[in-house]
Image (cartoon, rainbow, N blue to C red; front, side):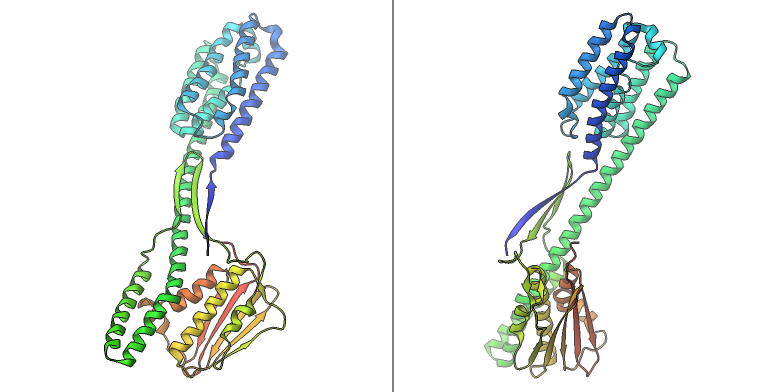
Length: 402
């Protein structure tokens, strides 16, 4: 079964950078329109025209710089803030009387874009630094600041710090989520490998131990060694010493999770008939009952469900004895597919499953319940001592993608 790497990028910052890009363009247009309506009131309009031309060219030329945190470098932030401060301080030079009338500086609210860039890039501390410089520039430009001046300065200062703090919290949340996904991926991969090991290696080691003990002689020693290796391998599997398959990294573009997924089995482009996978189990001691029409499931779901049935039959052979009979019943419903595996063995004593799981024997926990959980289904085991065991496997027709 082939492997493929899937990269999932998560970032709450990217929408903020996009919003900042739009904000800078819109406020640039607003500053140009405002000057166009009030240009006749300026004593030195050429000062305003010169600054606004520089601001417009700078805004349009640096749009890629505010696309993400990686491109928004410290030198760019310093230059951007310098232009904003320069525009504020040039306002009295353009015409102090016109400024007093309309109450706006040359860059108007475009200045807030520079402060917001600091907030998104570096958090609330950077925002406090930039907004403090803007506040000082406004006070100097006013000469005699009034209540409205302090009100506007305080509003920008508080808003920028709040946005910077929210960005820091969002980044921390992204790192936590990436770590949680990494742990979840490691757990799923560990369970998958444990199922594969149980269905293959552990089964073979257990068979070698039983046959070696029965034959005796040198074969008995081989069986003993196989039994020791089985115990060691079960301990290794149950302890979770399995390498992770996903790694998270904190980048300027957001948290990244790389996942290694199983591709679908060969020919998995279309649905698979579950009956063809289960019919191979039919035999003298196993009765297979199926619907008259194909039971179609996605290839991965059909394969995992068939493997769970195989694990249930292995348990029948191992624990119910070679003479025990088993029945497989497949039922197809509109919302789910149900496969029932029943035997006429001695049943499972109370507490035996919990004891086996504690000993590292995870056949039911992983090979059966684990597989069904991965498919978004359920596995119910009903056993009465002396009356056999019944395992009911339910799989939704549209498997869960979680």
